[in-house]
Length: 423
Ligand SMILES: [Zn+2]
Image (tube, protein in one colour):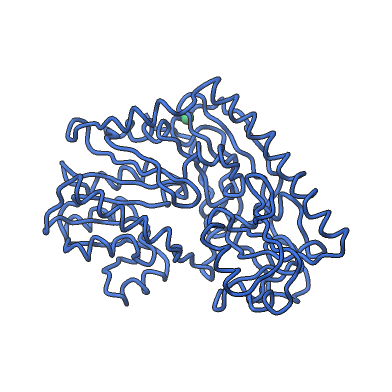
């Protein structure tokens, strides 16, 4: 029933091409887009170190017309893309915190959660999501493999530091009982064997339990031209349709789905064992809005063309600034900036430096694949370069006023979906 040729790169020290669909096993995958060879987004070399050889990986998107999944054409060993020295701490952006608070309010109401109900968050990171359920008086448990779990525990948010698996799920169930709700925010796209994860979730989910996942939304990615969120950590790009296909394979029924603003456009999808929850109109509504088959091929073709044009348009914009002797810096170095910088071909001759706020672990290192240094943002306020490109452009509305307030007077540019100077 499940694909037998799952691309497993873990332990290879390298990468493995995806030869059949990670969800349905279809071998006739179609190429959507190629961003060329890109370095791992966390591969940041200290400034001043002599250049050494580093791995770059092909970055190609594939489309499966059988289950509608869009996926990366290559699986890279997690040891390469998740080096222990760069633990990702779940965004401390207000947008994400607000989203998780809202997730709690929505689900507590929709599912009429009781005090004794156990909520388990898979890939719980620093506990930002699950803390909302704890505040609501429910029993909670986070599961997080990295050292970030220590931050959560120090904050009083019970977190198990383990890689999530069927064995761990069994252990959790034995110790705490079955979970009424299992949440997984933004880890559903990262794990190599997604079927094993769904099976593990089912293992600890109560018979009337509910699984809530949040994933970056393929349709939003296409519509807002967020090709910069394509990198090797993200193996799969879901629509409600493809997620439904995956969950259906495990006897789970999607009963509520809706768009949420996280990461520039995500989806929150509720699923339960078939027949245990009334299916809401939201599911049909979301599915009806998603292209399929030839319509999807057409959308993906237009997307590819727009990605190419966005590169040329950004060059046109910054060429004018450079011709006039202007200096350009970048603002913030999220993972997505690595894809943009390397796909567009920005280097240290074009971008003087990229700013991060004080305390960032990225300061003193080079942007992946380049010699552009990452520096503390105070340098930008002191030097006032003529132009600053906001690499976290998906939260430009939140960032731009703050940058002005702190005293930046130059031109603020967002590189996507259409490169432009902000007012
Ligand atoms: Zn498929």
